[in-house]
Image (cartoon, rainbow, N blue to C red; front, side, top):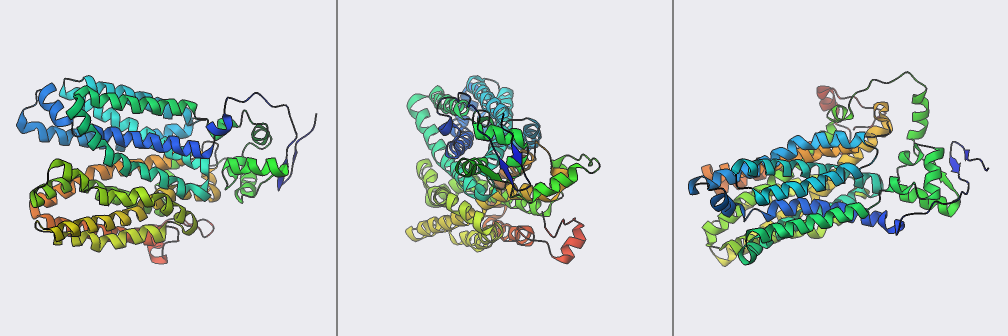
Amino acid sequence: MEKTVITGETTVLPAKKKRQPPFLLRYRSSTCFIISVVALACFVDVFLYGLVVPVLPFALRKRVNIAAGHVQYWISVLLGVYGAGIVVGSPIAGWLADQLPSRRVPFLVALITLMGTTLLLCLSRNIYLFVLGRIMQGFTAAIVWTVGLALLSDTVGQAQVGKAMGYVSMAIPLASLCAPVLGGLLFDRGGYYAVFAIAFATIGLDIFLRVVMIEKSAAAEWSEAQAEVLKATPRLVEEQSRPMSSVMDEYLSTGEVRADSPRSARIEKEDTSEPLRRIPPMLLLLKSPRLLAALWGTTMEQTLTVAFDAILPLFVKETFGWSATKAGLIFLPYMFPFILLSPFIGSLSDKWGSRALAAAGFISGCPLLICLRFVTHDSGAQIALLCILLLLNGISGALTLPSLMAEVSRVVETKEAEDPRFVSKTGAYAQAYGLLVSFQGLGCMLGPLIAGALKEGYGWGTMATVLGVVCGVSSVPVLLFTDQKPCGAMKAFMRYEVYDGTNY
């Protein structure tokens, strides 16, 4: 039998008899297909959230017998507990996902559970069952997002993670736009159960595609080259800064794989040292100023985005006398830049890093949000001004969200390369994205509360000014910590350790 020769630079792989691969393995494990499946899962989650929004007033009034004066209160509760489920569930989901050898199990279980919680909401005639269903829906959404984003990082590698996050970012505004409109249309034409019929159909499609999808690591069992690489050097592929598909393409063309990651030598050296202190990676991540800056930025961006959901429909109704249909269409200029620009912005963040893009989004968003205070009365010019400001604010948000989502993955990659406490087979990507999704859930809770309270207590103009100031202030931690070392005074104040001159 031929021997596998391993050197410090290359791994030469022998030929072996192939096992029979699954049907269409190449396509089912392709990077494009995996990105599509994860993006669809995130789309379905946001879609289900928005689909029931126009149905809730009817369901609470007719099916649960809530008094008319208490309907608004219970709608706020049902929206709030969904965000609470995300906040609580995301770190748990991240930790569990990193303990499992595959992302397949938690991802699939989350989708099946989502089917069950949707069925509970469909059949409930008790307010407490509605609350339980929304909490569980938030918890399963946390698993879908956390595991899905970690799966993307596993698949594409650091070189293209920004572009991948851009495609996922497209799913959020797209679902936010079409779900309430479709939900209201189905309810008017087909009734209560017609709304949930489309919900079950989308979840069923999502589950089917998740079963069809084969992860890169699972595909290695069926690929001669991948299996030999994993058998010969268990951590070689994991240590590459490139995705596994790129590593295997190199072997198929040259017959060898370059171990070009600077982490390799450090791991071999560290493996012979005394055992390292076992600290949960999530706690280590929370000590990173770079990650905290990314979490702060995504929380504030989510807060600003969801704030519009709470205030815009009522504002245009009161100011312009618009109907519910027109009020829904006002979100088009705001969401359109997210849909159109997110993949492009993600690709730019892969080349330039996250700091310039995210900071530009927050800095430009500050005056644009403040300018909303000048929309005060009903006229064609005022409607045009509102639409233009919303479009420009959408561009600012599109600069921020994909780049900061990709930054989370880069923080973990830097940690793994420099900090020996992160050297493990399980890694920490799911835990990092668990923190991200948890903070986004916090933004979902804060946005409507802050914007609604400011508008109700102090007026539209004051609300716009406060949101603009918050947006501008949010650029400060992004400028200080994202993709760079903190300044000397700040570093001394915060007492963060810097390994090899690298801030993580």
